[in-house]
Image (cartoon, rainbow, N blue to C red):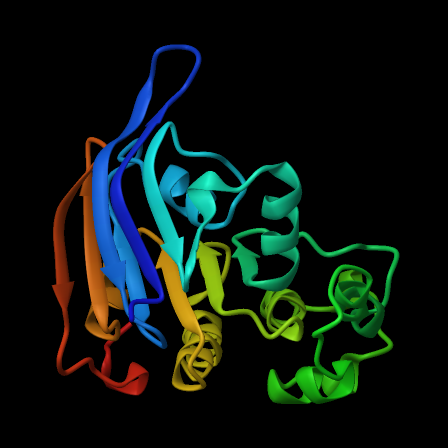
Length: 229
């Protein structure tokens, strides 16, 4: 059974813009998927629909066994709280809270959270647990956002330009962390302009003008250290 299956998904906005025009894709459990396309292609809209942050105009969005396109607002809130993790280009962590406090915020929205200290250790920042975000580098702050996202043990991890604000060395470190999550059966989806990520992805989905131009499975993805960044 697929982890994600979108069927004939259309998204129209009130201003008359059509962002997605009958999108159909399948992504299997534990895949490391890469979504690419020019600006305005519909990538962010696609990610917002998968994350339950927006609703499709028509079509179905199956996550596991649930069609979230039919969810009401309360059901979408529960879905966002329990089943999906979000990582963004800008880290969206609370500046007035310590690293551990930021990660522990997840305990307020789900009862399936992991142990914060173990999660911080897994992303390599346990020594910074008592520091505030302004005391950290950009890469360290992104590690905090990853820790917070995986704290809830999500089925799906959605990443919107997660390395966009980082240098190449730090980007590689972050991609390794995300790849590790897919190796642990979390489905990881990355939207980014970094074309090199296609070399390490299990699946590469190209979006253009609100349609899927191609959806290819990569049988032999390169190891991250093999890519010349």
